Length: 474
Image 1 (tube, helix red, strand yellow):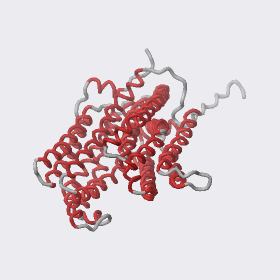
Image 2 (cartoon, rainbow, N blue to C red; image 1 turned 180 degrees about the vertical axis):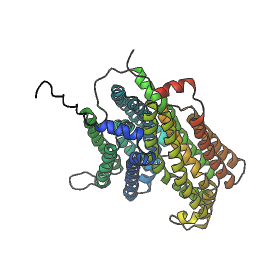
Image 3 (cartoon, one colour; image 1 turned 45 degrees about the horizontal axis):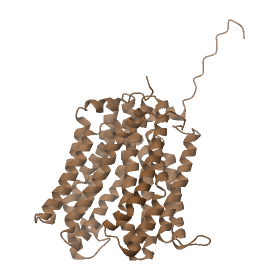
Image 4 (cartoon, rainbow, N blue to C red; image 1 turned 30 degrees about the horizontal axis):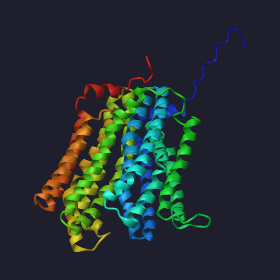
């Protein structure tokens, strides 16, 4: 080539998978992107539900005392799962998403390390709490004799795996926050395939495996999460995905970025569980038939959770990335699009259940008194499912924006109106319809206040948090 020949044009390098994922979140069509990010998590939750149902089936062969023991323990694993996924996990997803959206990859990787530290600390806290306070708590809940022994055995093995459970859930939350949803979903789905046969093998003893009774069910879960934790740690340690595990100094700013959202979200999970507990106590005042009817009817509420939570995790990612990138208009469009979708799906289910309650209730009972109580609940409460859908999705959107003041108020309002009001009405002699009306009113208040959180001016500290300043020392 002579000196007069023009220089060859520069060849632009192809965008990396990380850049393509970021551009899809910031500029892709809203609904397809929401579904792409949300559906794998829906699959995860459905797989976890399948594992829970399978374990309930296998433990039913161990007798009534063992079933009662598992029932005593169940609220604690449920609380830990909610806190690690939607509570502290929501704070992790929000912080990582805002850092990724702002182009602060080093901060996103640092947040992964801080999430891992929190996972180990909180996991050890739950293990110690179950070992030290478990016996007292299970006795206080009415556990005696064989039921208490079964509770302690199951609790001991299950909470031995608290640290791996927290590691899996917080690492999965960090990856989701960066837009990587397939690996966490795949790990959980493979785990379900493993746990479903492993649990009865350990419970009843097959081949060289000893018969462990109810302790085998707890050990199966602990073993699965231990294996899943190793897979996810290997993935981020090798830096094969959107986040890389590196040695970084621990910084208070990184913990604040996570816990500023995560602690309020964790309180929300506690408030939600307490609401259910108090409403159940209120309905229990009307007798066994009322309690059975309420229990069957309210199972429909829980079937909506995987759909709303899965969509909500996608909202945290998209709103958080958009907020970090300064695309606030897109963040609002994501939030309201998802809220309308959730309102449509949940509201349709609610209206159908209110119009045809026996189509659901008849799957579980033919007792006329139980059917009557369950139908009353669905006719009064199910029409408010649309408000629950809006409230949950906008709660997740506020997580993504790191503006949790109004969701905090919404959770308190639901607790006071639904649980406090329902219990007060029941004790004052009001009928079941009045109690269920309080539950519906609490759901509507929850939806409206979270909607207000999306349009209200943020408090000064919330505005600073949503900007997501760099975690690096100045």
